[in-house]
Amino acid sequence: MSALFARQEARRARGAAAFIAGLSPRGRAGLVAVEVLVVLALWQFLVGTLRLVNPVFLPPPLDIVNGFGELLATGTLGQNLAVSAGSWFTGYALALLIGIPLGLLMGSSLPVDRVVGPIAWTIYAAPSVAYQPLSKAWFGFGTGPVIFLVAISAVFPILFNIAAGMRTTNPSLVRAARVYGASRLDLYRKVFLPSTVPFLFAGLRQAAVLATIGMMVAELTGSSTGIGAVIIRSANTYQTDQSFAAIMIVVVWSIAMTQLVGVAERILAPWNRRKGVGR
Amino acid sequence: MSPTIPVRAIVRPRRRGLLREGELRWRLLLLAVIAVLLLVWEAAVSWLGLVPAVFLPPPTAVLSSFGELVVRGDFWSGFAFSLGNLAVGVVLAVVIGVVVGLAVGWFPVLRFTVAPFLWLLYSTPKVALAPLFILVLGLGSESKIALVFLLAVFPIILNTMEGALTVGGSLVNAGRVFGARGVALGAKVILPGTLPFSLVGIQRGAALGFTGEVLGEFLGGSGGLGHMLERAAFDFKMDQALAIVIVMIAIASLTLALIGALRRRLAPWYDDRATVRVS
Image (cartoon, rainbow over all chains, first blue to last red; front, side, top):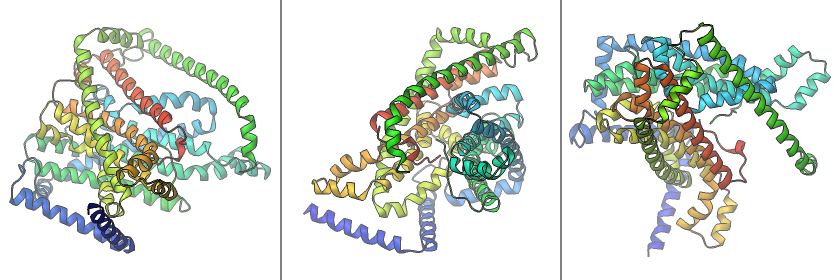
């Protein structure tokens, strides 16, 4: 009996799955949008109307929208978002400035790779949070520690991906270029660079995610400005609707930055397919 | 490709011996470079006075405060507190992450409806939720364990899910021919086939979980290595702070190495580079 029931279940599941699989990409996106709406409505109903959870701990969606309005009206949002964005871009630029040349060096010279590689992996293994108290002591309480943490979180994925891209360049391409009389510079510009670019963008994408995490960690633990500071201030004063609104902004920021890397990739390297290394 | 395979098979034993010898040379070079770096650091700080020792204590000072640290009782209780929370959170994340990942990967309905949500949650910077966890769950172990779990579970779910998708249909059919169905099929065919992927996710999850633990300790409570580190940096005992950071790096590296060894032991057939690296 139960076996029969299970088989029926399976068939029904297959039917629904087949239906969804048959949908167009747009239809599937619509389905996800409907799901999100259902979850939000359920959340609003359970917390806002039935009060199953203390709304201070998990404010219903409409309260969060309200909190967003408050943040916007008082100007807290604009100011702190500008500070966060400034630290993020500065730190990311630093990571690019350090990561790209060092990655190229690691990829093209075996001794550098064997010496810098293990040291870099060791620093990368520890959570970047661990460096936060040190950076606070070194750079004070302003945006300095935030920039430092963004940079140290973002530099390693860039570094490792570029090195991996250089090392996995197809040797027959290199030989072919040599046969046609390519100089060392030509070799770098026309062979190594194009075959490393997909890895570079994979690294940049990972770095964008990690940089946002680094920014959050630094701003949460001892910064008086920035989105993280808004989150911790509003949480400490039990205005959790504002905290959630600020968290949503961080989420949107993270997604937007990843998309930005994607856009840059489509413009700069339209031939790319996704590749990459990392953990 | 095909003609190179037999050649490689013949050459391999000799080659491996050579490689080992080369490996040893690189290790020695690495050690030498580290020694030189430490010497330069020591010289710059304590002999030449280029950097004030308050900001960057020389390696000898870090070493001696490390020696003081390991004989202190509160260091070991903090150590046990941090590692205990980390272990509980990661184990919970592994159990739930593998089960959910297998289910979502295996059943098409779940894959189409739940997986987009999981990807969405996975890509959001969940560290931003940390202050709310402290607010809701208090300053004790609970909030840290919850934070470790939250950060660790998504890489495990998504890597397991991606792994379950790669289990070959012919393996599953062979299992069915031998009478495995339901839970037995899951345990004997799908789980082993997915294991290397799950372990990659667990490795990533453990690293992120450590971030959660340390961040949780920074934000509230009075136990753990993170708290000790923050106190040391706050009191400007930079030598002690650096010693604690080194302990954290060691913990993180050892954890990752342990899981890596586990992966090689449990799934020795698996090529490292073939696994999906969801970063």
